[in-house]
Structure formats: C-alpha cells, structure tokens
Length: 171
Image (cartoon, rainbow, N blue to C red; front, side, top):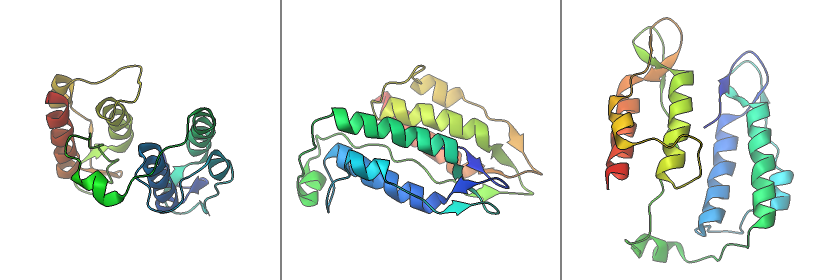
C-alpha cells in the first residue's frame, strides 16, 4: 500500500490503515457509522512516528489529496445494512490490503518489491485503474529478491496472499 519508513518521519501504520478501511467502506457503501466525507479526508491527521516503522508521509498525503478530490467529485454512497452486504453472494468481494509479518535474520522477501507488486495486484483484482494490470500468470511466475540480514516480509504469508489473488483473477 504505502512505503514503510524507519528513522525518518512517517505516519502511524495502524491509524492510517484504520482510516483507509473506513474510506474503503464508504466508497463501497458498506459503512456502519457515518460515511467519510471529502472534508474528513482533508482534515485527517495521524500520529507522526520517527523511531519505529511508519508509512511515508508524502505517499499518504498524496493519496489523501487524490481521495478527497475523487470523493468531492463522486456522488455520495448509499448505505446498506452490513447484514445485507454479507448476504449478497453475487456482489463482488474486494481483496483487502495484506499485513505481512516483517522478518529478520531468516529468509524474507524484499519489502519494497513486494509492496510495489501488491499495489498493482490489489488495483487489478479490485477493479481500480492501474497503468500495468497484473495477470494470473504474472502472479504465478513472480519472484521476489530474498533478503536475510535486513528486514523482509514473511515468505509464506506473501505466497499465500498471491495464491488468493491469482485465484480471484483466474475466475
């Protein structure tokens, strides 16, 4: 989703993820409380972090600017009860952004490579316009650089996520 940074200012990962989930729920019309508005997006603030992992400030801010512009231009979503959404099997299920466990001193996948590819996968699977949509074949043949000394993502978790994404694209 966003580049993870350490030793320079970033935004608290959990706060950003929670806000993005609320935003996604609003866009999909499945919010439980009040929907997120363009004003909410423009006024969103997150706890800055410096000595622990956080999301890139520039990327999050750029995403929020784009989301606010899109929200202002789009008609408001119509809420429907959460139960009804769960009972509608024909309705498309969105692939949620994964949270991979960082590993160190054992084999992992290069975090930046995985994040970049996962962004494309999520956009393609969820029907969001993307410059280079991925194919099921590309997912099945994708190989990431391995890392051992620096932090990387848990290999099994990434592979399981990609298998699910490949299944969804193959349908």
